[in-house]
Length: 476
Image 1 (cartoon, helix red, strand yellow):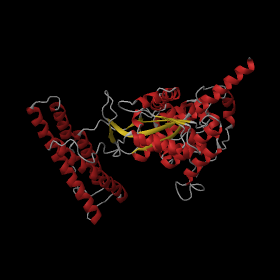
Image 2: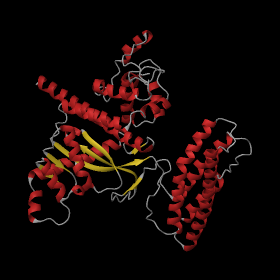
Image 3: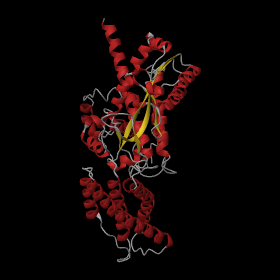
Image 4: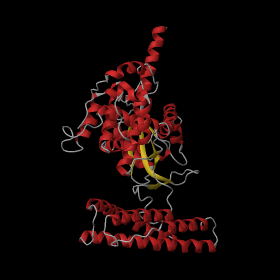
């Protein structure tokens, strides 16, 4: 059941509430009135109501929509985990007042995790659109200018190597097999613990990879073959267990539901582990480093290799994200891009998204050299963009050089550079450097909430700046 947004204070908390109201937070207080928007609360309420058929009427009380919205914002502002969020809410009066929990019991971290997951990527985009709409209504983002860029957001994975992926596969399959065996009759399913053997193989591969001699390469290949043999044995046993369960030949004396859950885990991980075996054989034994459909993580299979030309980090493991920004630091659009696409393909989607948000094309649009192409310039002008500032690549003609030396063009490029600071702000203060929510949908939700939180604080900063300017004029 959805809890009410009208919270009655405890009578014994009233004296403390008076003192707590005197505690000010310069960061959270300006954002507080923005989160009272009825449309934002209604979007969260509708999402909670779709959890089950009768969630809006029956069941135990859940987290109220206003509290859920504020907890999401504060978590991404601080870069906390769910456990950190629970601990800080429990112990800090300022955070309790901001999230409207006051003297009431705060939820467990697992409750936060499950409830946050109700806010799907589609709902997150809708909430973001509403926040951008608020910025437009208040005059923070007129939408006359647009700058766009792409960046990489890392997935929550360790550095992927074939040996560690094989080790992960053995571990997760053996864990599920062990849990199935605990629900079966003794002796029906014998599960071998390969942890010690896997650890030795990983150490052997790590040591052999430190040198490039022929002897080291042979030792590494021998260790890989032993590791592959163990992995194939675990995969065969897992396949056999799934087949026996589907045929009804597995003698279960415990809880069949627990067995079904673990069998479903096996069905999920088996194709991924088999793909890891295939790519390991191709790379280590066959010498082919360009295998199609590489698996970079068993737990975040949507992870992709992104190469942005950085010297200090040539390969990044995550997803490419497009960021569109308008005036006063408002991020008007974001999109998780598939693969390592060229920036030229992201230019027109950025303009179409801006037109959908603001009802018109921007007067000026700019991006870096990666977005330049003659077709992009032409299509932007046909869409109604008066000033398109895309610096050309390569040797410039006299006409192009003269155009890029014009004052409006140079001013546009100087303004474009500000999006680099916006991306840095998103990644560090607003914790978008690494997405920690699980799965592809979790990744999109994480990016979306980082952008939403950043926009709210940009709006609050603009409002505070206006108040100071107004006060200065009155004093003068």
